[in-house]
Image (cartoon, rainbow, N blue to C red; front, side, top):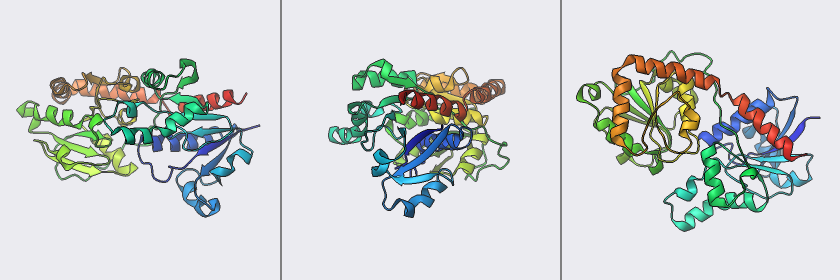
Length: 347
């Protein structure tokens, strides 16, 4: 008999970050690759559920059952899966909550704002949900900050889709030179300031023939000021993002704190050489396929970028190792391991 899983889908319509990509990928894999083993129900906050069902199916799979989440306890569901950093609502059913990282505890948010954001984390602990996180680094952080026992947390690395074909079109940019690419939100912990400082420190011959592309949710135009031609694109669709990855001279991930770093894997899958900080769980994402620099050190990042941009053999080696790393970490594996954990807590 298939395992009947209720998916907390409250943010499925709006989340274009890594968490949204993760949730859609696992729902897709469970609905296709593991369709004989899983019976999914999307649980949503809106009423009446049938009115909103079509929108949720468009964001996931077209045949999924959609119910209002306050009906979960009475439904024929074996367990609930909460992918959005904790429990967004309460239930008596067996629960698996994904806490992707502990960045909120290390953030510079005002205390009241931080505590509000941490409510789903604390609810997951209070209600005895089994916890999944993305990396061994995040597991250590969650054990420390939430006073959890290590055996209550499973580590399930994120995965990636391999592109069906290499994007053959160059993205529309305001300059024609090769470019460095950053993908992510414009927030302090992402280290954009370190990247901009490093670009300014590149040798003149390198700096004169490179541009910079920033793709993601922008929060401050000041953060995008650079001595090289710069394109700030904001959020981009999947096809544009794929083209950006495929055509990048290098992908730069300068984050100061990261539970995993999904863009690192996505860049590798598209054949972009990856230069990343050694912060948090990033090395668990990139393995031996990235060129790492000391987190927060603009000089070290500039040296790493110079090496990649000046030496084509270094860049090509990173491309080859990156593609292999991506092949080793498909979403199918993430979905399979997560399914095994959910099944375990039901028995």
